[in-house]
Length: 318
Length: 267
Image (cartoon, rainbow over all chains, first blue to last red; front, side, top):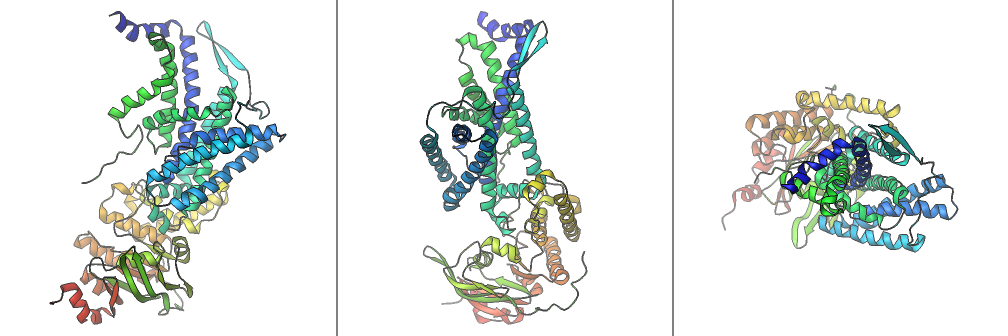
C-alpha cells in the first residue's frame, strides 16, 4: 500500500503543493523536448526522401558545431564562420550523394544504413583530425545568442527561464514552420514527397533523384547545425553529443519515422516525460530515470501503436 | 479543353523516335534481342506480344530506366546509345506504369502538379517565400492542371489522396500526371489492365482524344486485342524479345508468326 501511495498519489500531491516547481520542470522538459524534436526532424527528412535511416545524423550535429567553433578558433569572425559552416554542410550533402548514395542506388535499405555507419566513423575521424578531440565551448556570445534568465514570480515562488532556451524554442519553431510550408506548398517540396512515395514515378516526371537527395541532406545538415549550436550552448561541443542523438530513436518510434509533426510531438512528449519522471518519480528508484525512461515510454508505445502517433499504417492485401 | 492544334503539323508522319538493333539482357536472360522499331509523329503505336515478350522492357529502354547493352535510340533527330530518365522527361517523353505508380500520400491534384516539375523554374528561395514570381508561376501551372482535370473529368476527386481512389480512377490520375508534362511522346503500359468494360471504353476514348486534340504521339502496350485493333495505327509484335511482325492492325492480325505466337504452334 505504501508503495502504491508513493507511486500514484504522492507525486501529484507534490505537484499541487509547489506549482512553481512543476512549471519549472515542465519548462525544462519542453526545452529538452524541442531539441529532441530537432534531432528527430533531421532523421525524418532523410528517411522520408530516401528511405534511409541515417545513423550519422547524431555525428552531423557534432560535426556542424565543431566546424563552427573550430573555424572561429582559427580567427574567423563568428558570422562568417556560420556562413562557412553552412557551406560545409552543403558540400557534405553533395559529397554524400556523389560518393555514397549514387553508387548504392537500388541496393537494399540495410546496405545504405550500413553506409551511414561508415559515414559516422568517417566524420568522427575527420572532425578529430582537423579540429581536435577536446571539448570546446560554443561561441554563443559571438553569435549574438542571449544569456541570463528571466525570473518570473509564480504562485509564491520563482520560475526561471533561461534566455538561450527561449531562443532555442523560437528558432526551432521557425525552422519547423519553414520546413512544413516548404514541404507542403512548393515544387521542390512536392518533388521531395514524390520521391518518398515512388522513385520510378518520380523519375518518369523528370524529378532528379540526385538533386532531391542533395537538398534533403543539406536540409538535414542545417537542422543538425541548429541543434549543434543549441546543445553546444548548454553543454559544450564534444563527440559525446552524438550520444544524445540516440534519444531521437524513442522520439521516432513515438512520432513515426515519416512524420514531421510526429517528430515534434514525439520530441515534446519524451522531453517533458523524462523531466517530470526524473523529478517526481526518480527518487523512488534512487533517480537516474532520465537516461532510460524515454526508451520505456517508446517500448510501451510500440505495443499499442507500432506505426507511431502519426506514422502511416501499412495495410497490405495478401 | 484546348482547341485542336492549329497550323500545319510540320513533322506529322516523320519518325519521332527510332530504336535500332537494341539488345537488352539481365545477366544471362535476354529480354530484348536486336529489335528495331520506329514511332512516327502523331500516330498511335501499339506494342503487343505474349507475357514475357519484352514489351515493358522496351518502354523502359525508351524512357531510360534500362540501359540496353547494344543498339541506338534516336529521338527528335538526336541519336544516343542510352537515354537517361531525366533526359527522356526533359525531351518530352511521359509514361504511365503497368501497375500504377502514383504518389500515394498526395492528393490527385498534387500528383498531377508533379507533372509540371520540369516546366517550373523559380528558385528555391522564392518558393520558400511563396511570394512574387514563384506564386504567379504556381498559379499559372495550376491552371494548366485544372484544364487536364476537366479533360479527364476528375474534378470531384482532386482533393483526395490517391491511395484511397478506386483502381480505374488511379489509372486516370496517372494519365493526367503524364499529360501535365505536355509530352510529345506518351508511353502507356497496359492502360486498361484490370479495368471493367465501361472503364476500358472510357480510357480508350481518352487515349483517342489525347491523340486527336493535343496531337500527342502515343505508344501503348495492351493485352486486349480488340482495343489494340480499334485504337492503333500501327502494331509491332514481340515474342521472347524478338520482333516477329510490324504493320497495320489488319496485316498483323493475319500474320502466321503472330498467330503461332499467341496460340502456340504444333511441333
